[in-house]
Image 1: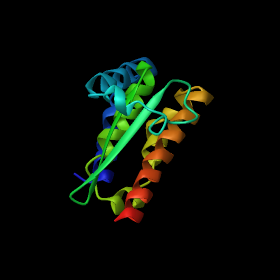
Image 2 (image 1 turned 135 degrees about the horizontal axis):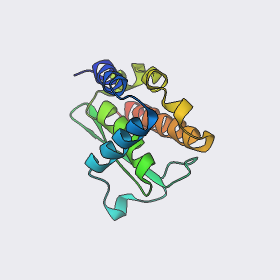
Image 3 (image 1 turned 45 degrees about the horizontal axis):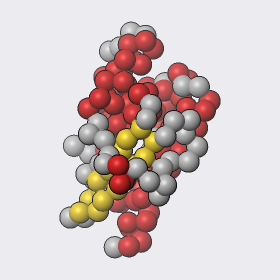
Amino acid sequence: MTIKEKQKKLVEEFAFLDDWEQKYEYIIDLGKELKGLPDDKKNDDNLIKGCQSKVWIDADYKDGKLYFNADSDGILPKGIVSMLVSIYSGHPVEEILDSDFKFIEEIGLQEFLSPSRANGLMAMTKQIKFYAVAFQLKN
């Protein structure tokens, strides 16, 4: 499944939820599916600056694809970063760089989040793109 297809699927899943309470619960459930990071990966290099909670994103490059894993000490940020990991992990760097984050607007996520959480979300998306650029330059 491409990144665009995963984004579309997620938007459709959110469309079935009636209100923000249900959407909030869904995001929390997504966070429970995230395998998390070992303690040695929860370091300053992987820490996302600008998040209200602590959020770490780690990336590995294997067989021409970028794989993300993440964790957070907050239940909502963990769900949000889980969404991003599920969409972007396992794709070629070029596909990640060519993708956008319009699905976040389509879900209405930024309207639902406090300004500081919305800033954290944007910091997470920037970090994913940063990793893609870094691995593109390396290879």
